[in-house]
Length: 311
Image (cartoon, rainbow, N blue to C red; front, top):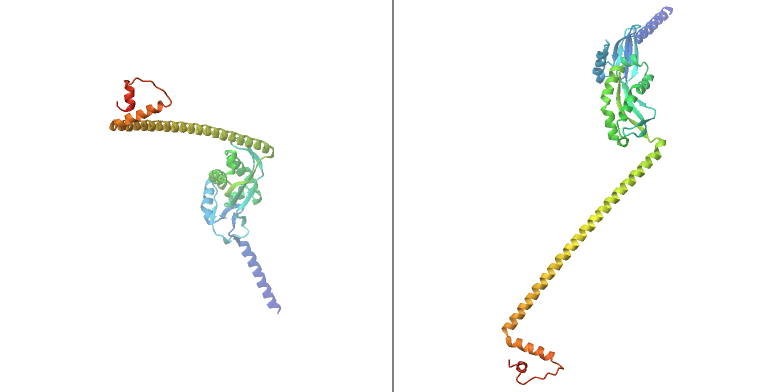
């Protein structure tokens, strides 16, 4: 019985030793992690995401570091007590800056706060330059935030309220910024932008005053343009009225003249066709004019014959 217990104890001890050796000779890298393997305190290899391996290798080539790049996430082996492992989160982390007042390109002031989402894609470079993940915000403050403010200084005040314009301006410099961050610190920025923008309290009244002046100026311009259009419209209407009246007067005069000519023609035709009728009408007119008039004439006077219809 004692011999059996001794065997069990030996087996249990062997299992414990094997577990310790297994634990000492293996390490695990989750899919959302990266890792650095150091051998005798010197970096030997890194475990990174497959899609980032080429970029990490370029970073090592540029810096002259002799470090192997592997993509073997999951269970990995190491030399016990010779190699130690540091792991870093590969998840996107968010940085939000302090609010600062800047001058826009058109010399106006605005309060800005920016954000950035970033990942550690090369843990070896990050470990050498920054150490722990807690130091990442210092990197953002020192390298990223000044670059964003420098870009923001190139925008006019009104452009900060056009989200597409701001995004394009920040994105245009992001590739150059990432190239430096990846090759130097092993950090890649995924997204960047303006987190908050406000008017400085001291400038609100000044801005309101400028807005009122601009509105008044625009109102005066619109009133002047309206008065000019009204004057032009009146002049055009008066011209059309005068032209219409002149045309109508000319037409009516021509019509009256044509009518008078037609009446005279008709009258002449009537006289020519019946001379006796004409003479009769004239005698009737003469009798009407002689009404209530006493005329003494010699019997031999031609007028007596005219009245009698003999001449």
